[in-house]
Image (tube, rainbow, N blue to C red; front, side, top):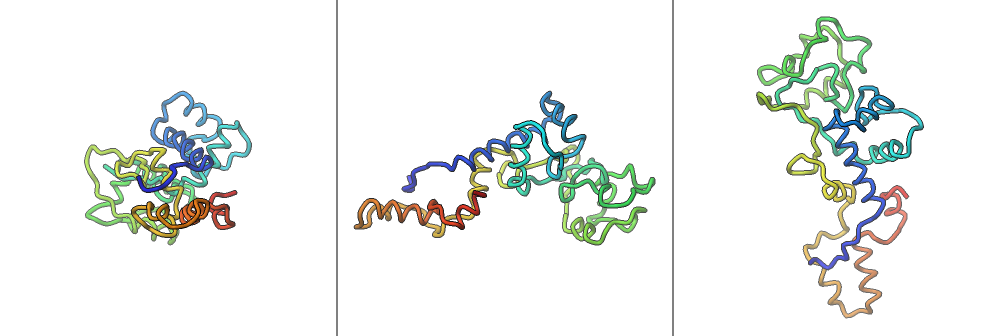
Amino acid sequence: KYGGLGVRCARTQNVALLGKLIWEILQSPDKLWVRIFNDIYLKGQLPFNNNVVGGSVIWNAVKKAMSRLKDGFKFKIGDGESSFWYDSWVLKERLCTVVPFVAIQDTALKIKDVWANGEWNLNNLYTNLPESIINVITMIQPCLVMNLPDVWTWDNSTSGVYTVKDAYNWLSNPAPLFDHPNWQWIWRLELPANIQFFTWQAIHMSIPTRAVLHHRHV
């Protein structure tokens, strides 16, 4: 339709496909294979910052894909029922890991308990948070909705649901050098066919220059 060949990069496509496993880990903790991964590798933590060395071929592939996909996953606050300290809703980390200890008065707090009247009541906490974390939290302005659970979403999809297509498009950034709606003009140039094809490749960053190879992690 737009003059492209529609050939996908196999390496990028593979990362996008592995992202489906990451999505399943986040969305379906009761699935048998997710429970096995949790028992062996995750130990109740999210996969984003897991430092387990070694493991199965699948686990190592998921870890490599995670390094490229993690920024696309976002925690969306719904009713605020998630634990303020023990759920990974800020920077994909549990807040209990960034402080020496959580004061016993704070352990049962939920997100909705700390967000009230349109602002974060962090001064009421008995546990001292680092200034850097306070700055991150205050940038989050949730709109609590009753009976709408807190969920992980894929930030680059209008529905919030992870799809291989959306992930591939996200991974394929940066965009081409020229943002043109239709590429048929290339094939109308009075040039030899091989020059036309070379031009199309160059504009779509398909020629393996050093910059392109670096972007593809080759």
